[in-house]
Every structure is written in C-alpha cells, then in structure tokens.
Length: 263
Image (cartoon, one colour):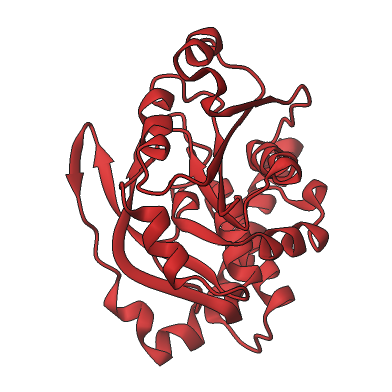
C-alpha cells in the first residue's frame, strides 16, 4: 500500500464528511484512510456513508490535555497504518485532489514534507504569505529559526519518520505543543517545503490550538517556552533572545499567581 491518511476526528462532526470525501477523491487508488476518535455524535451516519471505504478506529482512552490526546490518537493509528507514506489530516481540513500523487513523487525516505495551504474562514478561502523577516539570519539568531506556516494537515513523509518520532518522545511530558510543531522540529534538519497549495486549513473554534493565540494569557507564553525547550533539545541552539524573553514572561505570570495566593 502506497499511503495511509490518518484523520483525527474528535469535535469535528460538522466537517468530517467533507474531509473524508477529499481523501476518497484523490487521483490515486492504493491508499488507506483511518479515522481515529474517542467519541463522535454522528458516527453511525459516517459509517453508513462510507462503510468499508475507511477504517474507523475508536480509542476509549482520553487525555485531559488536548495536545497529548491528539498525539496518542495518531500514535495508535500509526500502528495499524499499512501505507509506505503517512499523511496527517485534521478532521476539519481537507486535501486538494492531486495532493497525494504530487507529494509521493517528491518524497524521499529521510525527508519530512510540508506543503503549502489555503485558509478557509467561514467558507471563504484566502492565502497567507510567509513572513519575509523570518528568513533573515538576524531574526533566526535572536528569535527562532523554526519554519513558518506549519499545520498538521500539511505534514507527510515516509512512515519510518513517524515511527522514529514516537520512539523518541514521551507523550506524558508534553503539555502545550501539538504534533505539527513537535514532529517538524524533531525532523528540522530533514525538512522539505513544497511550494504547492495542496491543503486547505479550516479555522474553527473547536481546534486543538484554541486558547493559545492570546498574548495576554500565560498559556501562550508557556507553549512558546516549551517550544524553545524542545527545539534546544533536538537541535543545537546556543542563543535566542526570544527564549530568555519567554522565560522572563512566564516567571512574571508565576509571580503574579504566587502573589494572588498570598492575598
């Protein structure tokens, strides 16, 4: 089997039919589609619609921390994936018809591939360009050098890359980082960015990343700091101004919490 698509479906009931159809419409036939979930209110309807065309993998275990839950679901689905290549897909996103065939032609065994994507906001599509300053050497030195425009549904690669990733990560130690940035940073030296728009990312309120975008919330800075810690672990980084700034901000939030407990 050439490829397996792993779809995480929890809380995405409204979008899953379109997501699954985008996989079935691929112009390549030798693929396996795995929908992994804990609970879906419309599961009977989905099974009726797609019957034996996809694999429904229900997981009873549920982590309270959303990013851990997503990591565990994909890990479980990976064990039954038979494809040579793995394609990740959030349950509210969808693929362009030519995605799998296009990327399989590009993919090498040691490269993790990131394709480009459109944003779907209230059924209107638009494109966000990469931030030009993130390519500058000074920015990378002082702030960070991880890639821009990363999303789970744009990630694919040889199955061995995903197996190796899970061998080297302890899910129970992850508090804030979702699989997209984790696996991208883990394979930082072997990334291949494809400048083709092959994915559509839908912006919804039910996403795993909800709550992480507000700069005034401590969770934003804790995720940012955890990302720096993880990056420094997997890639040799000697200096980052942003790393120390994030540490300082988190300390301020902790100090505020401590003061509130006292008074």
